[in-house]
Every structure is written in C-alpha cells, then in structure tokens.
Amino acid sequence: MTKPTISKGVADVYHIRTPDGDFAAVYIEHGSYASHGTTNYWVRVASTGSFGTYGTYWNSVGSDHVSFLTGIDFDYAMKNLTSYKHREFDLDESVKQAKVWLFVERRREDLTKEEAREAFDVLLEVSGTNSKDAFVNSLLESNLPFFNECYEWIVCERYKSDCVGFWENIWSVLVKQLQEEKNAKQ
Image 1 (tube, one colour):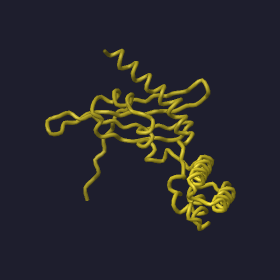
Image 2 (cartoon, one colour; image 1 turned 90 degrees about the vertical axis):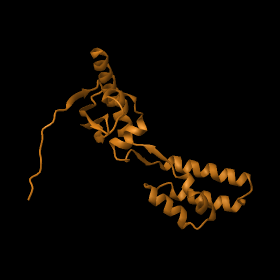
Image 3 (cartoon, helix red, strand yellow; image 1 turned 180 degrees about the horizontal axis):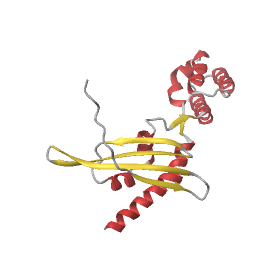
C-alpha cells in the first residue's frame, strides 16, 4: 500500500474584527504552476467567523491572486465560496410576483374574475409556507391552470443575509487590505 504524500504549506491569515463586533479569520493560500509553456495562478480562500464558514479553490485565476480577489463580484464570489448555497426562497416576493401575474392575466382577460379570485385565495393560503417546495406544491395541488403555467416564473429568491453581511463587512475590508498591500509593494 502506498503512503499518502503530505506537505506543509503557508497561508496568509487575516484576522478581521469590525467596529460592530463582526469577525472572521480569512486564510489565503496562493501560488502558480507552469502548464503548456504558460504560468497559471491559483488561490485558495477559507474563512470562519460571525457570518459562517466560506471556502473555495480557484485553480486558474488568470493573474496574481490579489488582482483576481479584488476584481470578482458578489454573485461570482458567493457561488464559489458557498458552493451555490448563497440564495434562499423569498416567500413575500414570490407571493407579490404571483399577484402581479394575476393582475396582468386578468387585464389581458386570460383569466375570468372567478378564476382570478380562486387563484388569489390560494395565494392567501400559501402565504404561511416556509419553503420553496411547500409553496410550489401548494400552488400545483390547487389544480388551477394559472399556477401550472406560471409557477416557475413567480418563485423568487434572495441572497442569504449572512452572505451579504460577509461580503459587506468582511470581504470589503479584506479586499481593501489586499489592495493596500499590493500598492505598497509597487
């Protein structure tokens, strides 16, 4: 049996604490490797703190890790740092979107007054659900053609508040620090 290879690496560790008491330890490991005559850069980021745990590995960031990390946007960063778990079902927006569709369909006369009233009553019943699946299932179980045709369009999501908090209070501070360090080296 072959033994596993173990090597020790070095990471930059940033301990961040905001005036509001939010905190995180962010670990950044980075490097480069040659491939087909070119140099490729990689970066690994891991963070634990008051907004939860985040982490990912980017194996080809195009340039140095600082330029990459300071240039990515919220959605791209969160998709990677959370393995696509940065969004959640938004019941209030979904109900609001369904009502908008009801009014549009009614104005176009694609729904009768009675069909619109029945669909509106279903929306009142489902407004107490707490998950996307329960919401969609309740709409479909109503057997109203309106919901069978539009349920995919009315389901809304929002960014998780911890992800937004991490981005606004931790990541923004980290990016500023990385940029200052890069500028000091130039």
